[in-house]
Image 1 (cartoon, one colour):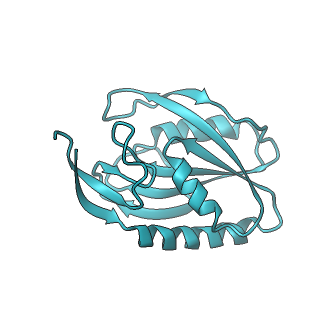
Image 2: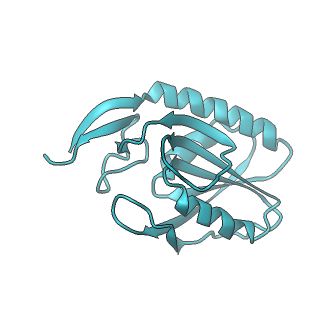
Length: 175
């Protein structure tokens, strides 16, 4: 695999997460907040975002699998790891690394909404532009990026490159 241009630098990511964390801190001050990361990609975003939130937070995680071709989600979702905690009556913030087709996320939000949280909101570091998706209200947005295949900062290719401190386009996958 060959990396292409850097889409979002490490410094830009840190500044944006600091800004998002400040907004989340103000919006949830005086409330108990549960951050829910969608594995595996969101763990990097969630860890760094949480360090910029200046109120006590709890963590939980979900892992989901979306069936379909390798390049496009079908929206048929299987929950591989569900939440460890009940969310009824709680303030829940879903943390995502990237919003692509939005089909899996749309399903997940519907699934969590029926569990009756006090509030349910979404934070995403990256939103791919130019992609048709179901309506999603993203309360805390990071960066809008072109619809290219990207890796880094939690995003992978074949399980690798999640540890890059920036987000880069994949120029080619052969060689």
